[in-house]
Length: 475
Image 1 (spheres, rainbow, N blue to C red):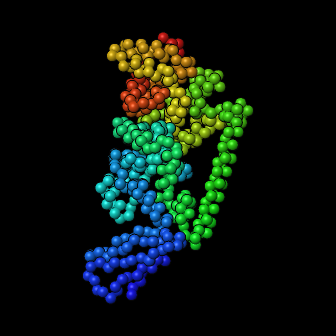
Image 2 (image 1 turned 135 degrees about the horizontal axis):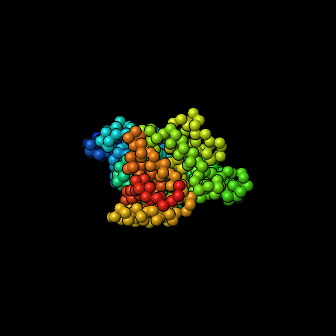
């Protein structure tokens, strides 16, 4: 007589002396005790082709995993919504900042994730057969936003995941990057917005990839159905898991109390504990602090460029070293004495990069939000003289810091255009650089591409008709 054992349950074969060409039936002893209740198994049948059907697992934690697989379909089965080439840079991994390195990636967007490949989809699929897997981004709880300040490149947006990963995506072609931005944003928006539902789905994903110990710690109700001999070790694991959760809750509580009790930025500034910043402050605040209508830093940068940068190829278009620009920004914010003739600022593109960054980080752009639509309506006028007169009238109505800073900046840029034969910077080139930096709508909408055209045109007109727009004003 043959015997087969499966998790403590013996299976006896019947009619062992019979040589059957068909199926051999196997029966299972009845288990009456609660101890063996979970160990019951269905009959195993040997098919004609000699294959044994896979028995249903009697192990509770395996059963839970099978249930989860039924609830959550594999990620690979998701339908592709969009794919194509973009420039990608990963700038943070689990909250840890990374050095920004741009690379061309084949991006595949599905309903709840993004995958990054180093080659086209066909090549990527062939590589996956050899075990190579693409980098994947889970869109549950992810956040997407435009990130002009994160790179000197144009058309850059950032994706931040709940796990602390941050990615920058970019394309020089406006309609392509806009299409990708809205496709990813729509995919995120379609995912559950309810925090409870979202966290539940995130938890399920974690469980699907977790070890059996983590699985049991999340599903302690299954403990009631576990065998007695396993209950002691599982209780030990659950106890430590509960302790970890308690510790985390304690830390969160302390951080919450610290944040609610800490003084506001305004209070710290009034006490002199934190100095007022130059970068990131409102234009009128900087001017009031310096008792002027044009920020000192703007004047210093313009003076340095006119002294040694008017003939430099691609001035204001070529990007300077970002680390050096950030160093200059730090010195300016700390109100340290700034000497742009110092050797560490010898690259004039660092100076122009810092000046552009100053204008990008203004909470309200040089062209105030309340004037944006009026400037757009003015540039839409068919008659050129009407355009000039309308924009001239709007410029005269601007607050003194905005008006005077605008006059100084565009006056400086006309000198750049005058040397276009050497620096190769035309009115159109400078309009492309400074249009989105100086003008933007308060609420970005779907017509951003159209706004970008108007932004460039307004900056170009301010340059080409500078003398007419500021003609009646005393120098």
